[in-house]
Each structure stands twice: as structure tokens, then as C-alpha cells.
Image 1 (spheres, rainbow, N blue to C red):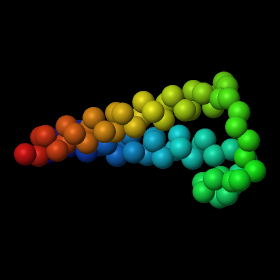
Image 2: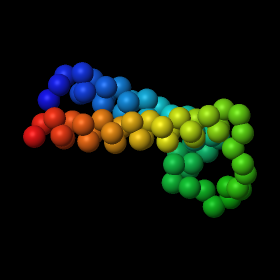
Image 3: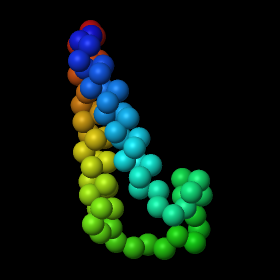
Length: 73
């Protein structure tokens, strides 16, 4: 398994965790488990950018995981 794939996978994982944690706004730990009093609203500005970045990082993470499995066998 190439070392650069492992380093890329770890980097993407850390970035993905950070973007998910940045999306928890104003709720503390209650925001992680979902709060009943939260109101639906549209994403704007930085929230929309973080949402799209999270999706992109998740796709890259899955692609890298697939490449790592393919290169191991």
C-alpha cells in the first residue's frame, strides 16, 4: 500500500472531522444528537460552503479508501 495514500487518507479524515464539527452552531453537545427545538432554515454563506465542502471531502475519502483497498490486493 503506497504511503502517500495513507497520508492523504489521514489528512482528509482530519479535514472531514473539522468541517463536521464547524457545522455544529450554537448547540454545544446538544447539537450533535439533534435538538427538538431546532428550526429548519436554509443554509447561507459559510454554512453552505461548509456543507458542500463536507460532501466533497466525504466523496474524496471514499475514493481514497477504494484506492487503498485496490492497491492492497
